[in-house]
Image (cartoon, rainbow, N blue to C red; front, side, top):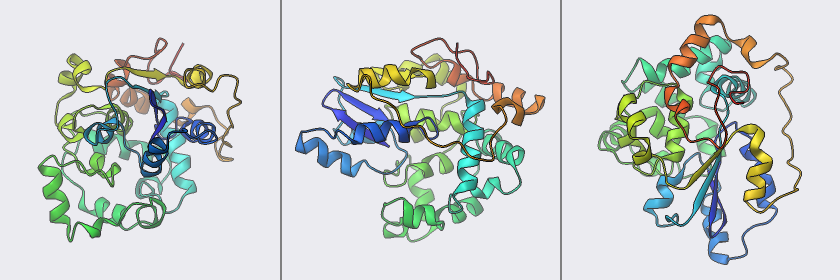
Length: 288
């Protein structure tokens, strides 16, 4: 989701990157402008980024976007335990047989299979996550069958009400893991479906043409800097409780083959303009 902090700043909530804790701080001081308050109510749910705000003329070139990213090695583990905790989550489709199966599924569904998985789609749109928790209109308010959804996706029509489906259904020519697709969807200033149709080399060589201008990308250890930049300097960040089942270091969940796959399939993350230097996707924290 995106939250308009004030007329100059927006915060982009990257899943499993401390976004909920930051949003808790921000929500305690809603923007005073009634227009911004109304816009934030509309933006309260859904993992979408800057592009819908651009086409709806909410985001402009004078604003600055702020987002937290973490090491993919941490992100996949964190996502796994989050998904297992919420039985209605659509990615439970992949989490049933442990972390290794989950990891390979989220990597391979974006790197080796460009075909739409109708079984996964059917599971996704029939979960409680979509029908009850998302707060968005049911898909079937607009789409009467799968063919209607596929037709919109194939014609590069971005699904604003169900942004996660753009990742699931888009043509994944980038050949990187799910985390790259999440981050690119959030930061893209062009239609993410068009962006997903590009190859990895094209995106790396032309990153500034696709990633929104005037964006500040923070590492997890930079959260105090983020809060300072948003006008919340000195505010104590509420810490989310760690899953009781995750007591091992992140890298202990990976075999050597999994780490090699992790590094191979997140080259675009390496190229993003972070606030501080980036040490690689399989580093325990990802950053210096």
